[in-house]
Amino acid sequence: MKNIFFLTLLFSCFFVSCQKNLTTSPYEFALLSAHVYDGEEVEKLPKHLDPFLDFDEENYKSRLNIDLGKVWTMTENEEWGKLVPYLGVKAFSRGGYFGRAYYNKKNDQIIIAHRGTDLDFKINELTSNQISISLDGGDLMKVLKDMDDDYDILNGEIPMQQFEAAQHFIKEVKAAYQKQYNSEPEIIHTGHSLGAVLAELCAVKDDSKAITFESPGSKPLALQLVDSEELNIENADITTYNAEPNKINTLHEHLGKVVLLYDENKIQSAHSDSDKIMSLKQHPINELLKRFDEKSGKPK
Image 1 (cartoon, rainbow, N blue to C red):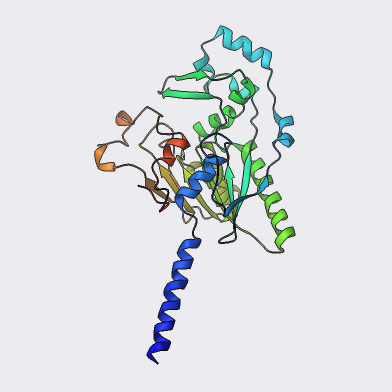
Image 2: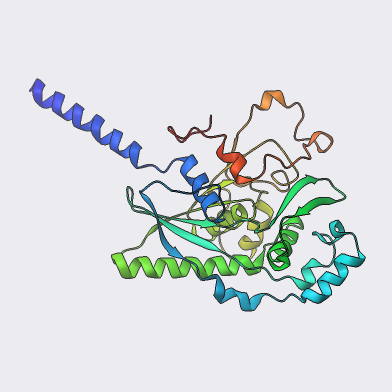
């Protein structure tokens, strides 16, 4: 009898241990949020996180509507900072969405990573009056293509073109999974910055889960979805990981749970307008990756 009890206890411990190992860690979600940018931050992903389906960005290039000659003329005659995002850009730029689905073989989950603002320039300082930037290259289309969506978020509006494209991508992922596995997939959304907003809105729309990074906050945007549908945003299963307060991650009220990747006691009154940290040096996803322990997958 004792042997049976011992074996049962041992099996239970082993089962619980396996269950824990199946969980995708916050660090892995951060890796995917970085990987979808197709930059140099993530060269190789863990074997159990394989790309499941890539979105064909070419399908949305027809939605770009930029008169490059006119924009170049504006940049020559006006201070560049005034164009981003406060003047002009929304009239010329219609951004292109990009998402990638990953298949976690350990727990049979589809993780959809939504790319954030796709820019080929570095943001140095953001103040309430100007944006100081330095161009890395000459591809103006890449520089401008997400700015109208960022402008929408800045004004508390849903970045509708990217949101609709994200919904289309999710539909394609679900169809591909159902065709291959003949079952409904469990989907978790992730993303950084603009990608975080898209991930959170998609999670609200689908009544699914989102793990996001440096989110500007999406509650006022999600309320606009509630106006047209019966959605319960108060119980949204969303967790966002944020660096020190800045003009992006304190833009709007957040949904779900916010995990701080810094010692809050070291920043007095950080959430007041006068004490907000203006520098965005900690905002990029590659900086956030440094805040996690690679082995445990948890924040340091």
